[in-house]
Length: 418
Image (cartoon, rainbow, N blue to C red; front, side):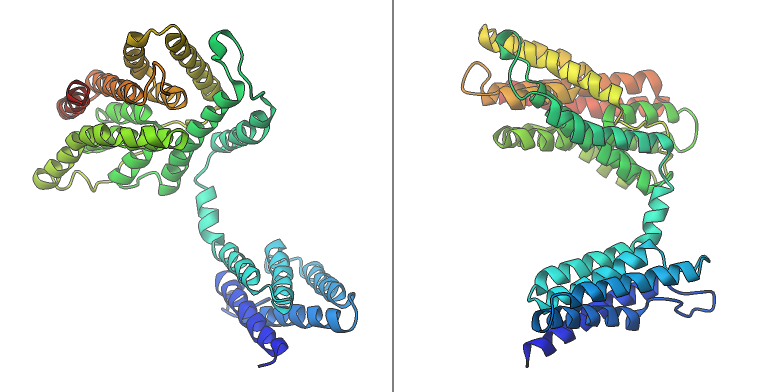
C-alpha cells in the first residue's frame, strides 16, 4: 500500500476518534444533534493536516502553514458569528488544530507521537464534566495552598543555595527545602484525593486518605467527631486506627525516596507494627460488619499545605538535623535514640527524613537509623493513643488505645529482639 494512502487512513482514524469523543462529550444541543465539530469534522481536520503536510513536501513548504491558518480563521469566524452558549470554544479550537497537526505528523512518519497527541486530546475532551465536578469541591483556601505549593517547588527551591553552613556543616538550605517539598507534596496529594472523594466518602477511603494527609490531624478530627454522634464510635475508631496504620507505609515510602536501603530495613518492623490494626479490622468485619462501610464526615482535617506549616517543618527538620550531626561528630551515639523518641512525640517526618539523609558507616549506621525511626513511630503511636483517650468517646478510647498500644508494643519488641 502506498505510504501516502496509509498515512491518510491512519490520520482519518485518529481524527474520527477525537471527533467521537468531542461529539459524545460536549457537542450536542437540546435536540441531541451535533451543533459543531463531530466525527466527520475532525476526520476532515486530520485529513487536511495529512494532505497539507505531504503537499508541503512535494510542492511548497507554505501549504501546511496556510492550511493551519485557514482552519484557525474558520474557527475564529464561527466563534464570532455565534456568540451564544453553543459556539465553539477554546477547547474546540485547540482540539481542531491539534487534530490537523496529528495528521501532519502521521504524514511525516511520526505516527507514534501522533497517536500520543491524539490520545491526550481525547482524554482532555472526555474529562470535562468530571474535571468541573472535581474543581467545585475545592475552596479558596485550597487554591491558595496549591499556589503556595507551586511557589515552594518552582520558585523557592531553585533559589536556595546547595551547600553546607553552620557548625558541623549541619545546615544545607537546598536539602532542607527539598525535604519540605517531599513531605508537603505527599501530604497534599492525600488531602486533594480526600477532597475529591467527597464530603461523605466511605470510612476506609476517608481514613486512608486522611492518614496520607496527616495521621495526627485525622486522629484529632475523628476523635472529636466521635462525641458528636454523626456516626457510631466504632466507625470513628476504625477511622483513627486506619489513619494511624497508613502513617507507617507513608513514612517507609518517604524514607525510600531518600534512602532505598533504609526503607528496606524498615519493612519488617513496620509490617509487625501494622498487624494490630489489621487484626482490629478483621475483628470489626466479623463482629461489627457495618462499621467499615458507613459514610464518614471528613470535615475537620485542614489542608496540610500552608506556607506557615512548611516553614515550621523546615525549622524542625533543621533543628533535628543539627542535633543528629552534632551527635555524629561528637560520637554521642547513645543520644540518637532519646532524640528520636522525643521527636516522634511531635512529628515523625522530620526525624525519619533526617535519619534517611544522615545514616552512613559512621556513628549513625543503617541499623541505628532504622532503630531511631521505629522508636519515633512507637512514640508517635503512644502520643496518638493519648489524643484519642483525651478527646474521644468512651468506646473509641478503649478500642484505639488498645490497638495503638499493641502497635507501640510491636515496635518496642522489634527494638529489643531485633
